[in-house]
Length: 178
Image (tube, rainbow, N blue to C red; front, top):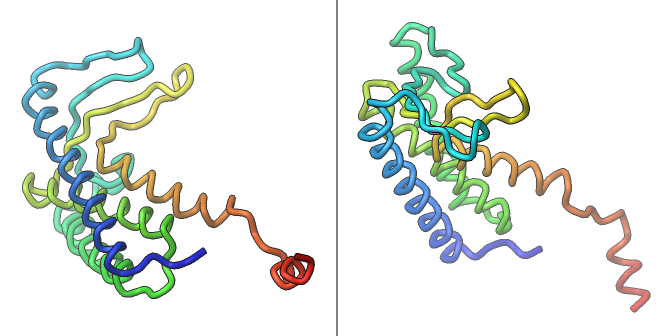
């Protein structure tokens, strides 16, 4: 698999980040204006619902009870450093293939979307979607940025674990047999 040329990589990353962050921020504004005043709007029965929530922590509210200063350093400063490192990596790594570039762009877009919330909302991220997975099992309340992060993680690891692997010497034997 060939690595993606830098110019194309930049176009792909910027397009994914702009589209994802734009969608995330637009839906969060709608959630604040339309969902904050209501309790919950059920769509597709109990399977999917819109429900306004403010998250002071990270994924599934992890760290929400930490002191405010600690949350700032972890969720704003440290996350900002990680996002800068990811951006540097996606543009400077020589051997990134298309799935890796898309996955990293999704991770960046989700991180940026939630970072905008933390900066604009005094450390709080707006969440507004919830799904009932099976019976009483349901997801936590999440947003479009969270979906982007999860899609990036699944793509990054899915490519690693489920992509066909070449056996040692397979390429050499295949070329000799043709």
